[in-house]
Length: 488
Image (cartoon, rainbow, N blue to C red; front, side, top):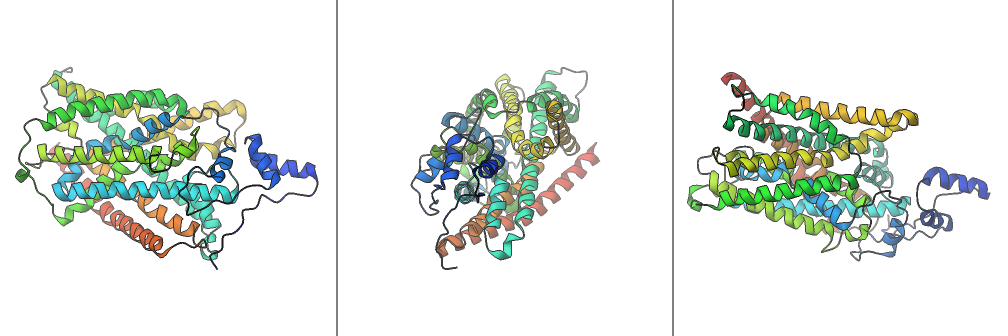
């Protein structure tokens, strides 16, 4: 190709107006009147792939096609984005530093945050470009992958349907993996509190506490709208930040010398660091759903946009917790899967942290559950009569929660599950797919050599982390599970 950009044309219409209206209504029912008028006038502008000016006329016109029943504000979106990223992952960062060392962990966490944020921008930019090409108001992650391959080189067009399914599979694995971890986290933290106060005649196994969380998780999963989840996310965010504040208090008291911990760990442990760190930063699955649901999506990107502001906060908090948590508790290599489990066992304030964190993570279950339901439900909904849709949706939500519960109760090992989910699926979505999609999307649009080399580097880095991280995490999971069974 000569690098010349193709003009964006409206959908083909039949000559008679009745057929034309039929085509527009059939393909774009539910979109706003402005959007349909743009299509009928053939006035859709071409997206500028290299432009950083935001919002452009393209973006304004593109967003006029969105018809949202409950759009979210910038503040709502930031809260959801923070809660989508700041969860159990931040509490596992000291364990990640244990597998990297103080210096390597600090640099590695900041670099990982930078790369993951850049990949989020890649997906959003590709989504905007493809929305312009296909003249739709928004696209999901899997649709971005599908449309990029459809309009990409001839050699990859045949894989457009396959890539959509692959992305959806990894999205489901990642988000449901998060939900599994949430079950384990809630169970382990509540168990520590109950055991301290001897509320039962004997100490119950963690499986019972995970089981007790099942019904509340099912009820929370029935909330099906992001706007209605905002107050829940707000409460979760407040509890999380208060809990983190108290945790910092414990961590920063009587800090040992830097000489008590390693600056760098054994190279063989780095895949475990990668798995935990990428798990912590993998919020890419919720980026497009949140941006698609914004009242003012033009505020999402940009240097001081919602995405950058949120991710700077996330990266700094992860580095802070990992650095000081490892420095405080890493001297004897006794760091547990969550830093809350390392807090004093016999102090009421420390117990309040465990309760707050357990409640915060429980309330965050809904936002993680939102993405897999967006994938599972539409194909099911299309096959149902209207009178059965509500019952079927509640049944589908309940079944998915039960599946995550069953997986959680089968392997209640927090740190190993976090690392495995991160290495297996989070690395694929956050590091491997975005650069590939960017190369395919802009292959004939004068893409620079620097961008090509950058994308290839990120994809190789992600693939290496996927292979080694998954292998080492599985080893760790199998070893610890065998060790646990042998001790009981």
